[in-house]
Amino acid sequence: APSVALFTSDLRVHDNPVLNAASKGDGGVVPLFVEDDGVRATGFAAPNRRAFLADCLTDLDEALRSRGGRLVVRTGDVVEQTAKAAAAADARDVHIAGGVSAYAHRREERLRRALEADGRRLHVHDAVITALAPGTVTPAGRDHFAVFTPYFRRWQAERHRDVLRAPGRLRVPDGAGSRPVPRRRDVPGVSPGLAAGGETEGRRRMTAWLRGPLDRYAQRQDDLAGDATSRLSPHLHFGTLSAVELVQRARKAGGEGAGGDAFVRQLAWRDFHHQVLAARPSAAHADYRTRHDRWRRDEQEAEAWRTGRTGYPIVDAAMRQLAHEGWMHNRARLLTASFLTKTLYLDWRLGAAHFLSLLVDGDLANNQLNWQWAAGTGTDTRPNRVLNPLAQAKRFDADGAYVRRWVPELAGVPGLEGGAVHQPWKLSPAAARAKLDYPEPVVDLADGLARFKRARGGD
Ligand code: FAD
Image (tube, rainbow, N blue to C red; front, side, top):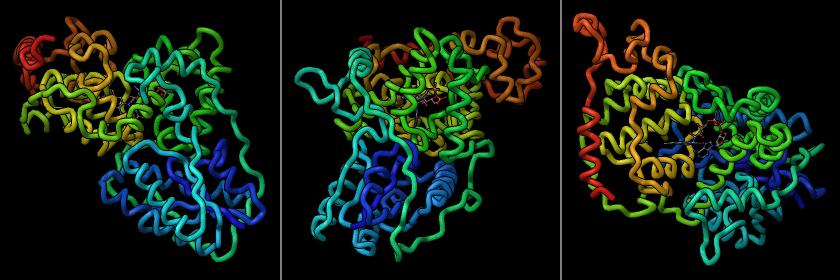
């Protein structure tokens, strides 16, 4: 009998346990993607991710066609549509990747019930979306790790599954039907500098990354203007690249002590946040550690932050990169998140929501838990550390190139004396400063810090 491979965050033919298992039998395979009304209803389908997703589906369809198959697209409720597709093909088995969010857990449960009622079976595959499945390594007596370092030790020592070959020929049973594959050009409101999606593009980037820049990753990962990180995050989010394969290849390419180690460590952070969310799905919205923060409310300050007009050039540069590319450098994410939650003392949920409305790699596990980490409500073991935006700017954008790239109002600020481009309020004479169409700082850093310390009770 045929099988259904239900694609979710695993839009690839290489190293995909879901597709491989579904295409093993001789009855053919229905490679299915459902444009899920449920996801749309959550508001999660922001334009940048919809556009990138369209690229991924187009490329996946081509990869399947080159193997004699094609992608079957349906629209509606993911459970109903999958059940219908399975019934139309009279498939006995449906395969899907295990997810970590509350939504994914519910989808799995509903799917299992609907299929079993019809005499079919759901198979959930592990280590498709992450390198290690959540729960593979746990501390004694607990269901997940709350601290990264001990997690990472176990993650490194654990045997990861082998990389799978892409399937050869595929046959899609007759009568599977399909809606047209969505196209990127049909998605309005996309950031002008949004990257291209799809497995072909992901693999091209991965290969280029492993051959060259990976070597110097450890030295350059925090250099804002150098832009020397992999930019593979959207491919990991949509699963156009397999985390298992990337870890394995980075380990081989990086060798001992080179960029490979530092890079693999970042990939483990991704797994770490996934295992936290899998065990505590509520952490997507509620504080992971309850701190009883009484966040301030100030819509003007929040809006200044969102639009990149806080008067702190390093913060504004980062927020404008986000709007323009739908992506932001990790160091920039950290310092803008710290600025919102600790300097302005505004609720992390507000920042996380803004990020999710734009980030092409916007991911419930990585975004919400990194936000909680930065806000000190999550897994940071030093929850009350505050990143000083000026110190960060001087350290990670020493010559101001990142600020000049993203804040054109400051592009002409001469030289670096006193870090002028990072502190335009210090420019003299005052007349030169008045000429800049650039706002004064929304808050005094010392005041912000004092307020935060009072609020957190100095612990
Ligand atoms: P590289 O430096 O090349 O790292 C390689 C890969 O490791 C990344 O692609 C990513 O999958 C993983 N990784 C790196 N850093 C982290 C991290 N801190 N946590 C989890 N995984 C990591 N990442 C997302 O994928 N989606 C998000 O929605 C997201 N939101 C974030 C929000 C905040 C406030 C912060 C501080 C970080 C967030 N990150 C998020 C993590 C990180 O910033 C991005 O993964 C990284 O910047 C992506 O760029 P890259 O692929 O060039 O990373």
